Image (cartoon, rainbow, N blue to C red; front, side, top):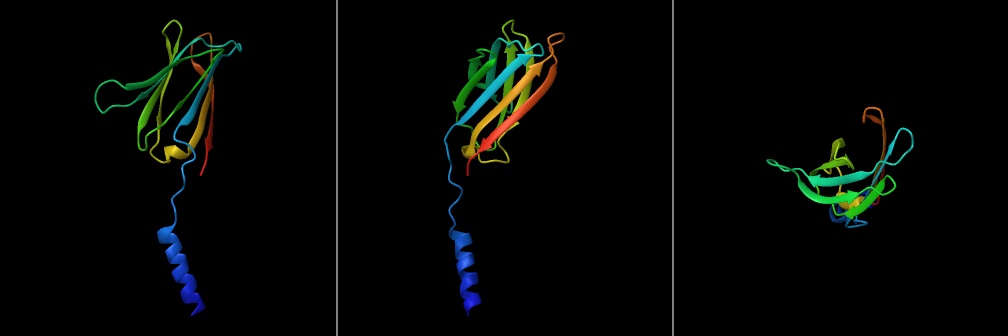
Length: 135
């Protein structure tokens, strides 16, 4: 009988359990970009939502200051985004996709990418990604 009540309690807990509570409604997105000689990259970073047809829908464009920029934006679940980095001379250094398909974006508190580019040919030398989640 004791086991029966325990199993019923366990089932009720599973059925009526509260989902993970969102920690924030926006994600702090950060990009740091430098050349391989440690100088700051001057330019802009654009966050755009991918469309099935046509160009990306631009969500925000931010200017790099001292090789760094950040923005707090709410991200949508199951969505693809493009992040594009342009130099001050309008040269595209990198464009990469990010997706929220496997996570609850409301639990994503902060995402940072630190990029280093080779000054000789504008190629990507290294990238470090840091993500903070809250549940």
